[in-house]
Image (cartoon, rainbow, N blue to C red; front, side, top):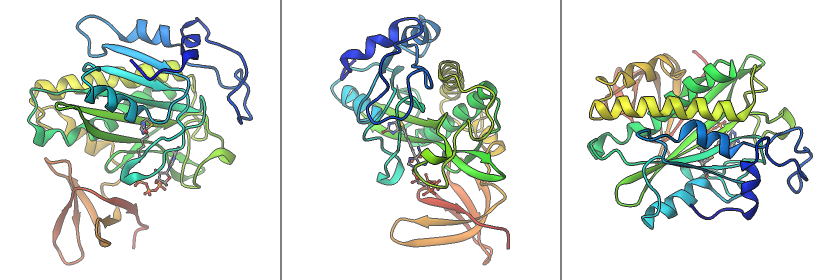
Length: 301
Ligand SMILES: Nc1ncnc2c1ncn2[C@@H]1O[C@H](COP(=O)(O)OP(=O)(O)OP(=O)(O)O)[C@@H](O)[C@H]1O
Ligand SMILES: O=C(O)CCCC[C@@H]1SC[C@@H]2NC(=O)N[C@@H]21
């Protein structure tokens, strides 16, 4: 898959390259070891499995943009995985920037083509990915994670909820979705892009070795995606709706939903409905489903 940095194959050497650190970085390579692309491929790519290829590049603008361009050109198969050690134009939801310094986290995109699932149910893909990321990381990093609706990954740092990861899902080609995942693994307090951000290491993770973390997330994603597809994308039948609700820190909280067009609604988040929308119960006794926008967790009244 392209575009690739010519130096990327350094990652294919066992132990990876240990040369100069990235330009402008205060970290040496020994502080932040590289991913081992060859070992990841060996562990993840197998006949009949979902992952058809795993490419690791040193640096790019955005793995979502790159994989979407390949999908648009018909040059990427279902299950293609593109990982970057660093992103220089990482993108978040709602046209925000996603900060991704070299080797500080997991920055990757996967191409999914759920042909047997009706398109109306594809909106569950980012939520499904959130469940897979939270499950994989809770297991492999030894840290508690929760989801803020729709798919921010939260950790607790010094008693505060902080955002350590996020998911950006975008249609690509005629029949696919590129799901991009960003997780802050070893970002230190003084490196955080915003005070509300956190990282797995700041939350006390017992393991911050990115290879096993990435494997755990991709294995969990393969499992959840398989179960959901077999259920025809039905969120209840696949158990996804229930599992999502169990891991969602937004439910039961007082929140403000900031909607497109400068409108906002305040209410208690009471459910995630079968379309993946967050249902707010307002003080007026109305149940308002919210499908898009920003959610702010408020203090209890
Ligand atoms: N590496 C990163 N880690 C965490 N947040 C980041 C990172 N890079 C950029 N950001 C952005 O910083 C902003 C602050 O995140 P925060 O969770 O506080 O607020 P938010 O605006 O409610 O985010 P969201 O809409 O995703 O819920 C977000 O827009 C987030 O996308
Ligand atoms: O929280 C968000 O708003 C979503 C952040 C998604 C970031 C990931 S990093 C890999 C992929 N490539 C991108 O440009 N964005 C996603």
